[in-house]
Amino acid sequence: MLRQPTARCFNPNDPQMARSPPGLYDQTWPPTSREEFPPGDKPPVLPPHLLNIILNKDTSAHYEPALLPEPNHVMLKHLYALSIRDGVMVLSTTARYKQKFVTTCFYKPTGK
Image 1 (cartoon, rainbow, N blue to C red):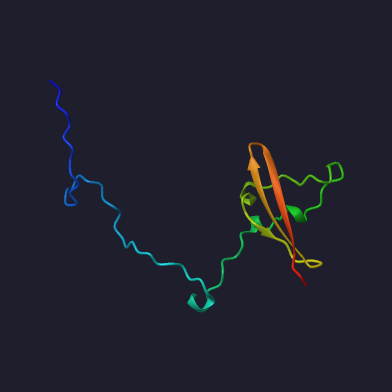
Image 2 (image 1 turned 90 degrees about the horizontal axis):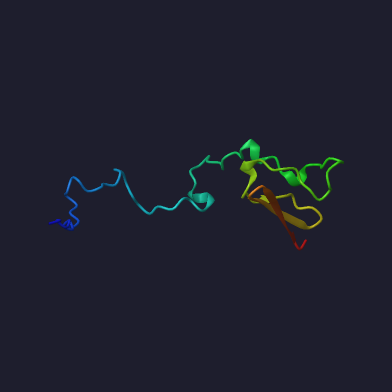
């Protein structure tokens, strides 16, 4: 005759039960305003590989003018904001689907 396993009740004092890693678990939020940051704290420097904005690059003569160079994998899923020129702000992001890359640009007048 087969024995059915008995269901164990949760016992926090049982040494065989899985334990959470030691440490403090709280609900603190990161600072949201300049006053909450410690003095002298500056935002982190932008990594150099994110300074390569593909919208600012020239395309070669043998490429179709609407095609952009292939982006680096670290440039995907980031939002880029270009300098405001002629009262227009440009935002762009690049996503990959299989072997294709799609760059979406948003143009917004600044109202100036």
